[in-house]
Length: 551
Image 1 (cartoon, rainbow, N blue to C red):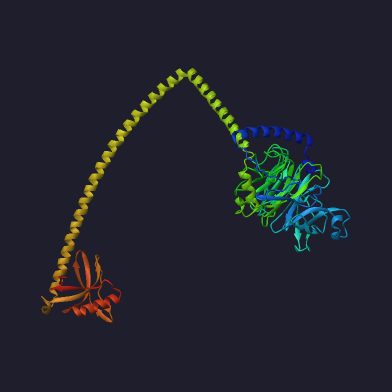
Image 2: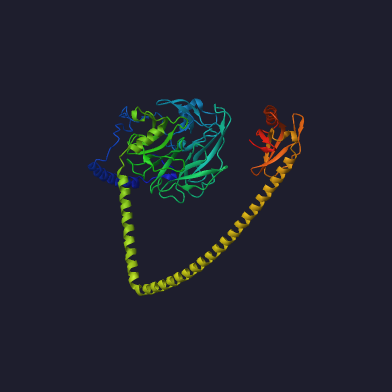
C-alpha cells in the first residue's frame, strides 16, 4: 500500500472491504451497461509492473522511472525543470556536506532523463530537508516554498514555508522553517500544499473540522502575507472517503487522488478543470494512468506542461511504491493539444467507463422528483380537507368581499364622475382663457404690424424727401451688408480706409443696411468684394429707384 502520514493512515481491512463492495457494484453496473452497449473501456494493455508497454497510438505514455521512493515521500515534485526527491546520502556520497552523517535521508534535486536522474545535487545546504518531497509547492519565481512536516513534539503534520536567498546556481540556501501557517490549527493534519500559478490560492488536504469524509481538500486565499480561513471544496470534489495529494497545474486545473469517486480500485488520480471561477466535476484519468492499486502524488512540469510524474502501488509484494514518468503519446486525435493537461482532460472526458455514474445520478433525480410530487399531493389533499371544513366561513367571507367590492366600486364611480366634471370645467376655463389669450396676441400683433408699416412709411417718406433732384428716377446701385429685425444704430462703416454712411431701408419686416450709391454696377461690385473680404460674406448688390428697391 502507499505509505500515508500518521494522521492520514488507512485501515487496510476496511479499505479492502470498501474495495470489495465497490467492485461488486461496479461489476453489476458494467453488466447492465454492456447489455445496453454503453461500456467502452480504454483498452490500455500496459500494467504498472512494466511487463507490457502502452500501444504507440495512446494519448499519453507512462514509463517506469528508476528512482526509489523513500518514506515519508510518496513521490517527487518539480523544481523548475528538475525534480526534488528524498535519497540516502550513502547513494550520493560525493555530495555529502561535512555535517551530514553517512546514510542520512535528505532531499536532492536533479534533471530527469528518460528513465534516470542527471547529476543530482543537495537541495537544502543549510539544514537537512528530510520531509516528503511530493508535498512541496513552489512560487513561480522559486523564491518561496510551502511544504509538509510533522510538528515539533507532536503527531500531526502541518504546512510550513521557507524562503530562498542567493543564486539559483547552487550558491543560495533555504531558510530554516519556523512556525506552521496560521490556519494549521488544532489536533489535525494539514498536508500537500498546492499553490496556484499566481501564488494567491492554495489547496491542501486535511482531516480538520468540517471534513465530509476522512480527508477533504480545502482552499485558502492569500491576503497580504497571511492566508484566509480555509474553505471546504464541497461535495463536487470531496466525498465520504479520502481526497489527498492535490496539485495545481499552470492553468490551476486540480489533480488529486481519491478512493471516494468511481475508480479502478484504491486511490485513483482525478482532474477537475478550473473555469476561472471554480473547479468543475472531477473526471478519472482512465486506465492510461490509474490501476487497481493506489495511484498518487501526480505532478506536472509547470514551466512547459509536457512531462509529469506520479507514483503507483500495484500490491505486487515488491517495493511499496513505484515512480512513473508521463509524457504525451502519438495519438493523432490529441496532436493539436499543446500540453499534457489538455490531453489528459480530453481523454478523461471522452472515456465512457464510468457512464453508469450518470445513470445513478439520474435515478437519484427520479427519486427526488417522486418525493417532491408525493409532498405536493399530500399538500393538495390537506388543502382540500381544510377547504371542506371551512366552506361556510369561505362563503361568508366571499359575501363580505363582494359587498366591499360593490361599495368600493360605487365610491370609485362617484369619484370618477366628480373628477370628470371637474376636468370638463377646467377644460372649458382653459379653452376660454386660451381664446382670450389668442385674441389679445392677435390684437397686439396687428397693432405692431400697423406700427411697423407706419414707421416704414414714415421712413420711406423721409428718404424720398432726401432724394437729390438729379437722382430722381435714376437707377442706383447700393451694396447691402446687413439685415436685422431690431433696427441697429449703425452710423458709419469703414471699408479699405474709406468711411461710408449706411443707407437703411425696411423690407419684409427687417431693416436692411447698405452703403454706396452708384449709377453703374461695376463700382458697386467692387465695393461688394471689399465688404466680403472685410468680414461680410453675405454682401450683395441691391438696385434702387427713388430709394425703393426694385431688385
